[in-house]
Length: 246
Image (cartoon, rainbow, N blue to C red):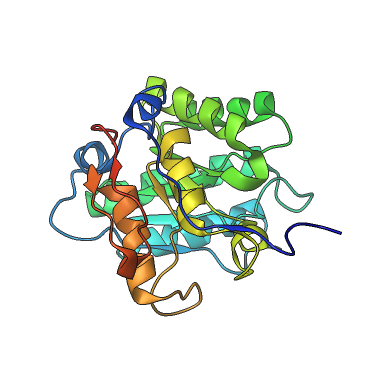
């Protein structure tokens, strides 16, 4: 016999005193726009497809063509890591070459989300260090598969070394897709804001990552705003004060 057949955590309120014990995002929206010198519009990017199978050189060529064609960013997919057909170091080098070539030809600052996720924290930081040495502006981490401790460690490194940090939510559906068990993504989003990330895949109202409009916009505000009032119509069950966290 079990007291509960299923249990789902919909939301939680994080006390301001506890929020203050976390660094939060490495930089935040305003610092990112300052670094990129891009204001007054959304940043436009895409994921390189096919996600698996390209050599590092061909992958870099695709990155260059996208950035040269007008995108601000391109990104690794969550399972682009370090496979025999494209080792991480080779990918980083060819992507950096693509970024610099596109920047020289367009006069704009460009970037590619280099996936630094690895099997150990030490290896992850090593990849982030290599990205910084190449002079690229941003790295990426799969925060649920990598773990919160690893993510917080990487966020601290990124703040100290001027790297932007993009967060991928790979594996979230295992936790949040069941309607009567697990936890809602807004809880994972709040945890991520404290752990640290400059932006995250939040889902969208249309397309592949579709979600309910009001609910999706609700947890987007939880990720962006400094103070959010309770609004159950948008799935925000508690007033949340982020005490100036980016």
